Length: 270
Image (tube, rainbow, N blue to C red; front, side):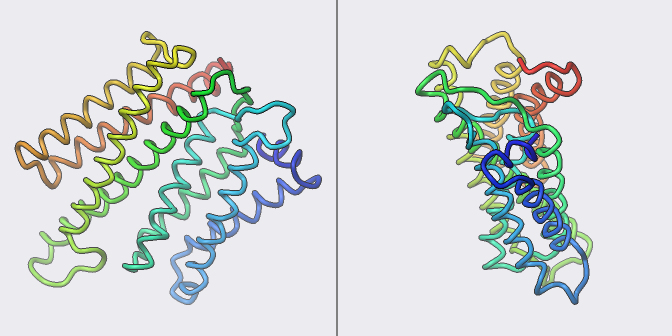
């Protein structure tokens, strides 16, 4: 568990304390109380910093006798949420998005909690390409996670616009949201393509017949169709976001879903 592995690098109980403080800060950041608004922003930032520290300690394999990383569905999911929160923190400096913080903070809380319960398995580095492959894969997850976050905000903004008609709407302008959504999709697609290419070249981590490979390629095809439809046919609005959600779901199943089935349902590590 992350509680035990963090205590390898920290004083006894230090890992438990870090997890507890991170959970408390995420909880405070998500409370929908106007009186706590000033503190909730700082709480989210502090929770994000502690969350990142826990990820470095545990995924980075600190305290282990050989170089490697602790991999599994929960660490990758936790890292993805951490990256999405990072994007939100940067953007919230430009445009206040309190409603997003109120449900993104619970997502961070759950990510830390799930990672504490299912820390995955420590694996030594067996290939020089393995760290890069892992970093690119997690980066793709984070970029598409940010794209999904903006797509949800885009759909919500369009619903408000249809309900209220012309007039001011809170949050980001609709065109800016749409632009940011597809910027993240394009960046995520480029990183995912590099991840797949590296995975195919690195035969230690790539098998054409396993579920991870199949779902990854299906997700890549959906994202490729989305970008082609966007540039050639002008897909916008819900038509585009549905393709994004479908591709993100397939990508989630590729590693997080397959590892969840393996680790939790089947009780195996490989």
